[in-house]
Length: 281
Image (cartoon, rainbow, N blue to C red):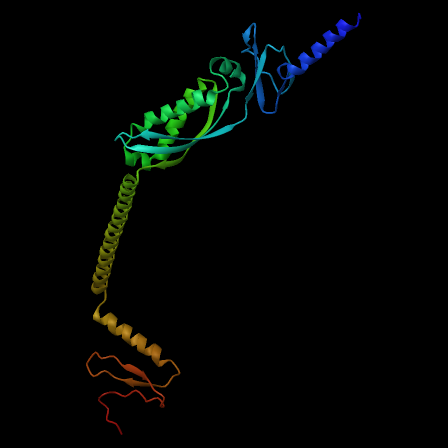
């Protein structure tokens, strides 16, 4: 009889342990950090529980936080400076600050993605998109995104969240506006191509003028320095060189006073050089 009460007490304790096992034994998995909330004492903000197995009082709560890089895809509408509705599809890569998850848990809680990350990024994007026209947003997306990323990173770091990257996956304009913007871009590139052609033709015309001036100067120089005597001497030298060859040839003496001999190739035997005043025998 005396063993009945201790046995019942042990049985009750075992049942209580089984019932509250999940509240007493808590596992912090790989890539996680834990924040302890004490029923009498509040949130422990100066300690992050590392990976491992912990036993706590059943009335306390140990909340795990994912410390790995996380990615969230989100869609929403924004207005441009002209009041045009633009549908954005973005990707957010982020993770909580490991050393500050105690304060994050106390001030914001585990639902920080929906309560802080997305609203803050939406706010920054809406503010910057409202400063640009439709075509500026379409053509300057990369530069605008860098500014948005820098501003969003600062805003979230104040909330103990680290923003790794922000990507605009797609920017959807109304079909009529998109066609108009693409037409503007096409016309712009056509204009640039036309400018290039005009500049190329201008340079080609300048090249031809320079070439013509060079040819003209060359002709003037030659005409001033080449005399009739030089031309006769050059003709005689060329005739002598031709006469030295072994090929059969005919030499015709010019009829004028200063005429030069002309040598013609022939399959017949060579004809001796005759003076124009001699009579043929």
